[in-house]
Length: 191
Length: 192
Image 1: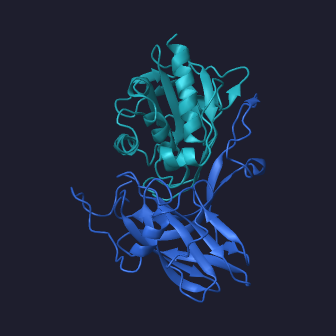
Image 2 (image 1 turned 90 degrees about the horizontal axis):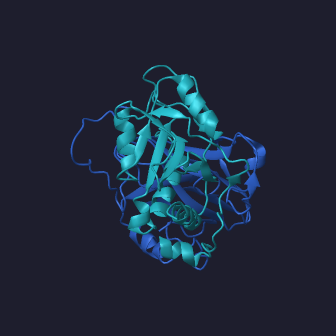
Image 3 (image 1 turned 120 degrees about the vertical axis):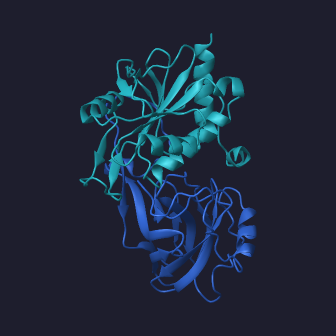
């Protein structure tokens, strides 16, 4: 569990260049409950069909070597697309992977919202596992929700904790739309 | 955070517990587990009038575990102080190879100032404790010093009362307002 860098009292500088992203963060801050259908993220280059909103990452405990980023991706175009990779600056994390948390038993996978709780007499509870995925599909007109307990962008070998209020640049690479950069705000939910 | 949750239509009303209540209830009072700090054996039974909130997880988990701990933290901190101080969060690691006592303490300390971390290197002790709760876990094969390997585990949170009974359990993703309501219901029941 040791981290590669020397143990120092203050966090290394990790904040990334924000220039184009601050407006996006401000726009996102207006949206509660993840519904901001009336806004268009300026992280999306004009002319592309992909729209990325609600980009956030959870603060990571000091000792944690892994973190996760979440977002909502809409494909407003007529062509199927897919998220293939994500990356961050070298001084943020050693590696970035697309992951999915899911129930090991398939019949638990559909609804984890807890809305149908009742009395149960089953003894052993199913497990959740995390698997790396090659791609996250974005069918034409569809949405991919990267959220806790589902798809997420996993940051491995964090070089420093993700602290509340930090902003983190993620470069997303789509099969059709190509690359663009979004900014995740570190906090306990979508900004 | 609470404002957002309410705006999203959470329902925290009513006296009935909204989490899962087993029939018959799980008795975990006889489970013994060692604290990560000093290895002293504790029983899974809350002090009189108090509750333990027990979770089996691992700190290298980037998604499920921190989400659960963050939700629990919100749920407990939304209680009035005099109730919140009767709740102790217990994080038992299923991955003792990576989760040393120091790692566990700092990890849980990120979410709770007064949490309790449990760790054992005795696989039988861990298995017995987990089984008593109905927790399953699978740690992928790894060599000493490996930092990246997969762990699958039951992501349920268990609330244990002062009789050593699991009073209610919450699946992953359970709404924090309903957790808070369950804790309040149980604490008020214990104090009467």
